[in-house]
Image (cartoon, rainbow, N blue to C red; front, side, top):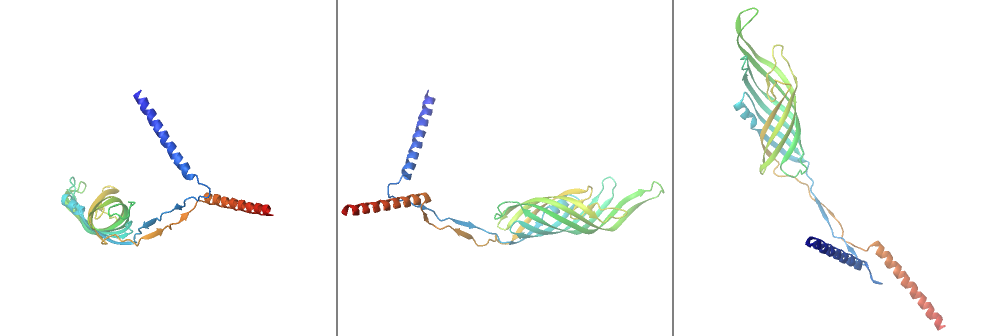
Length: 292
């Protein structure tokens, strides 16, 4: 019973509040004869929009993952990149590096050595909606190529057909390789213009100049050619050479302050004035007739 009583009391209070609001609204809408409605006042609004300048400077980065990879495995790189910043959205980029591989097959004992420069060109796109912030999440694409020479050497082997034994060596085999990459990466601001970021790369070999006796086991800047594609990664130290985000001047749109009388109220006021004028003319004519 107590719960029911509480609900009834709440319902009655809500109805009373609604009735008072309706009564106040009706009282505001009712006008006395000859009374003019209060004008509506519009407050000025200022809209401020910041437009980013097209050229935002350059970005210089150095990869630290490649040297660490060479320290713990048979293959590694040393790489730096120069990137153009357009509206903090589009980043055309050039990557230059030097790759080195010195490996030996565990089963066959065949060794493979290569060290040569490589290059990539491509584009990164910042996918974050707020372009004015310093952090970035981007998708990118690359085209890479390298011209190099590799050495292959094998242990002493016995010919099963002709007999005899001996070691073999194929030195200075020239080759040119081309590949494409798709990547996703992120950058985080650490201090002022210094960032750190990572990227995961999917690589696929497009073409390589083949040799009649061998094929490259590892391509500088690409990686091992065991499969048709491979994965790679970078962890970069990034320096923005723009010294602050460049913005254009603010554009303001001002809305004038003006008092506007509602159209319906104006029409009603005009009708009342015309009615009063007609009544005054009738009274004057009646007074004139009575005087005559």
